[in-house]
Image (cartoon, rainbow, N blue to C red; front, top):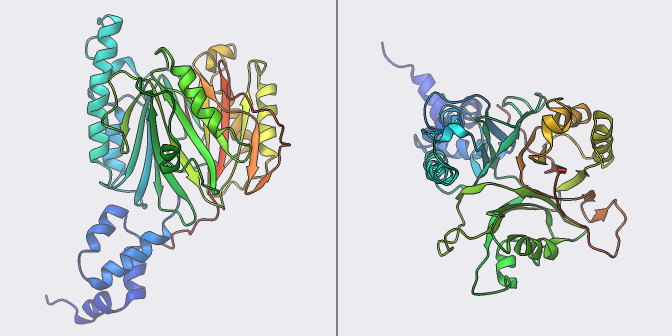
Length: 395
């Protein structure tokens, strides 16, 4: 049977029809289609420019083999996503299943986990675009919204194997930049040029910074972290994050970093359209009512839920046991007031943040002369980040 010449003419000449058809394809298939001809390439580029929604892949059940479940889920679902990620933040729970032999001593177990984490990192990075910025963290537990919809109930996973990967495409008016500072015994301070290169200095559009300290058990780590935090403690910037077990992936990592040093990694969000807010749930927040009161303070920022996401950084000392065996209490309190915003985060060994609301150049919270105390323990920091209006895909 001969091919229909009219069909061939349509698919090689009519851009509107081709673009409509290609708009149904996931990104990987779309990139392959772009190689067919010049028309398809131009149509594919236009489609990719409209796909600016944040996408994520989440893994909540243990995997079938020795590798982490997030590797299996991402391998399957990366073929289906309809964005081209430019920046990826992934966090995996430090499950005991990482080690084949659970009889290791503490040192042996940490060594096995560290080696295994590198294998996981390599597997995850191989699934992502080559030019993608990747930041990967290992934590004792994670907070994750099941994929598919931001309205799904976020889950606090305090034990076991779980993880997520946030996929940020190129977003008009928004710049996301990874950075890394490590403690160098040969010098006492970080120079201004390094801060400027990371987008953390001389950047009037800087709106939010996620900070993650690692190897915080090392001598001098808290002082080093405080040095960085103090230089960023401005009322016009939201700072949030916490202390993690380790970092596994960082595309901008300095290869001259000494072994077993302590340091800080993170993401800087810049753009005049970005609006953000954060609240601190301190040790006095011990029940559902007081947790909801904190979320009401966050709600008072009046940030749009569309094209927004939230982060929750909690102490390992909180969670279910802290709330007298009530699981998922803080994540549920967030969902009550933000029904359509996906929530992500982790349980760590210390928290960074405070009550602060920033909308563009206007600070809703009254500024005080004194700097905020941003380093905490036994607390939870919840941050809401609105990235402005996004171009919806017209598939």
